[in-house]
Amino acid sequence: MAAISGLGFGLSLIVAIGAQNAFVLRQGIRREHVLPVVAVCITSDVILMTLGVTGFGAIVNSAPLVMTVAKYAGAAFLLGYAGLAAKRALSAGGLSAGGGAPLALGAAIATCLAVTWLNPHAYLDTVVLLGSFANTYATPDRWFLTAGAIAGSLIWFVSLGFGARLLAPVFAKPKAWRILDSVIALVMTGLAAGLLLG
Picture (cartoon, rainbow, N blue to C red):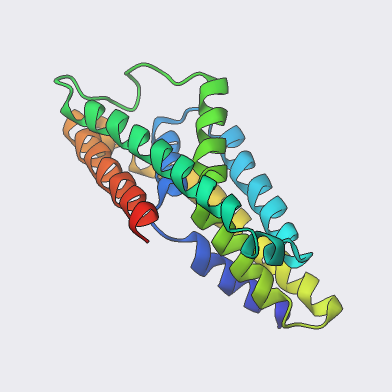
C-alpha cells in the first residue's frame, strides 16, 4: 500500500505544466536526445526524493538563504527560457519536427539540468513535501513509498518523452510550433512571476 501511495503522490507532484515537462515534451516532439533528457529527469528525481526521505528536506526547510538564492536564480533562468521560446514563436519560419536548428546533446542536457535543479518547486515538491509525507511512515514502508514515487517519475517521463512523438503529425506545421512555443513562453513567465511574488 505504501508503494501505491508513493506512486500516486509522486505522479500528483510531477504531472503538471512546468519548465521541465515543457522541455521534455519539446525534445520528444523533435525526437532530439530524448533518452538522455528523460534519464536526467528520472535521475534527478531519484536523488531529490532520496534526499527528502533521508531528512534533507528538514535542512532545506530550515535554510531560507538556500531557497532565496534558488528562487532568484530559477526565476532568471525561467525568464531567459521564456524569452527564447517567445523569440521562436515570433520567428517567421517557425520550426518543424524535422527542421530547425537541432539542439546539441550537451546543450540539451545542460538545459534539462537547469530546468530541474534551478527550479525551487523541484526542491519543495520532492525534498520537502515528499520527504515530509514519507517520514510519516515507519522505516520499511517509507522506502516502499519512495520506490513508488520513483516509479511514478519513471512512468511519467518515459511516457512524456517517448510518447510525444505521437504528436509529430500535429507539429509538422510551423503554426503548431509557434503555438507550443507561445504556451511555453507564457508558462515560464508565469512560473517566474510566481517564484518572485510567492
